[in-house]
Length: 69
Image (tube, helix red, strand yellow):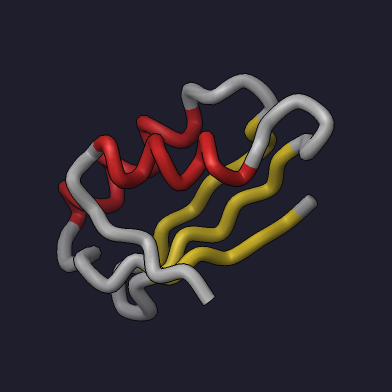
């Protein structure tokens, strides 16, 4: 599954590396890419191995708020 999350607090390279590192460590994540200018996180993951809530928790655990639609 692929999804894009909006994370309005993203503003710099540190944000990018922090979020990509935390999400990338989760079992089931195939790829993660933060786009600083768009303030988004693109994630490809195996939804049978990983719940969306775990991804959101990993991002929020780094101190960033995820906008939920």
